[in-house]
Image 1 (cartoon, rainbow, N blue to C red):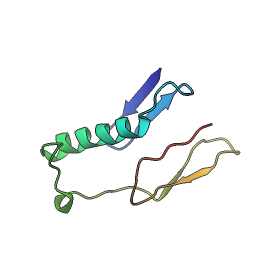
Image 2 (image 1 turned 180 degrees about the vertical axis):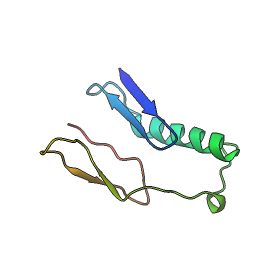
Image 3 (image 1 turned 30 degrees about the horizontal axis):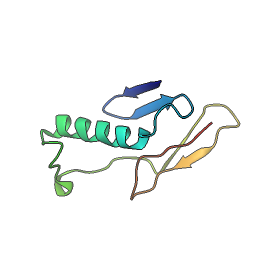
Image 4 (image 1 turned 90 degrees about the horizontal axis):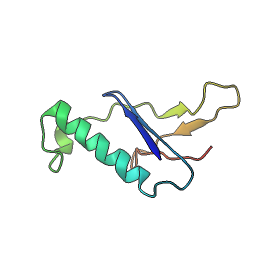
Amino acid sequence: RRLHIHTLAYQAMVTHERSHDNNAAAAATASLIGTSYVCGQDRNNIDPETTKLILDDSFMNSMRADGRRVTIDDDGAVTCWQD
């Protein structure tokens, strides 16, 4: 089971333990589809010179006090973790 939520600003996928092996690929593909829709470019031919990644360098994985900060790697903006 996988719940995939996305807007133009963000996307999140929540999966049951070991239910999907390709979550990072699914998130990356959804991002390409969103970028192609917004920028009017073919998702298989997005020009990095005409796109800009607008993203904070980290986010909290929970609003609770025991949440942790997850950092974003510039070379791989798909971030996965297990709670």
